[in-house]
Image (cartoon, rainbow, N blue to C red; front, side):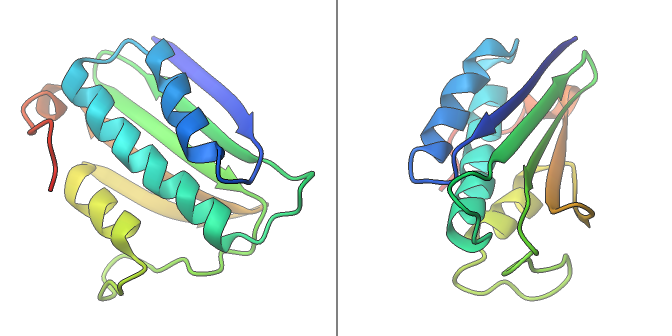
Length: 133
């Protein structure tokens, strides 16, 4: 089991910093590629849509077990631009569409900010292609 719980400033450096921190997790190359893509999209959405102040932080929480990988991206925003599952994606919903296609499970919780989480089953995540177009 491995875990990360890290804060990031809500600026353009946050997606890259979050991807970089993922190197500390015991993931296969394919898992790392998928998790990095999803984290990058979710953190970018926080930077773009959450309207956070400079003193507020985006938090990334990741937990890896033998069975699954779970990641949460948390911000203190009001959920501006959060689209729910089942609604047609717009041009700005690339991140949601990507999470919907690549994650085994995902969801959005709005309690003390916005929590967007996803899970990958380890048995299936290694069979996914490492390159997504």
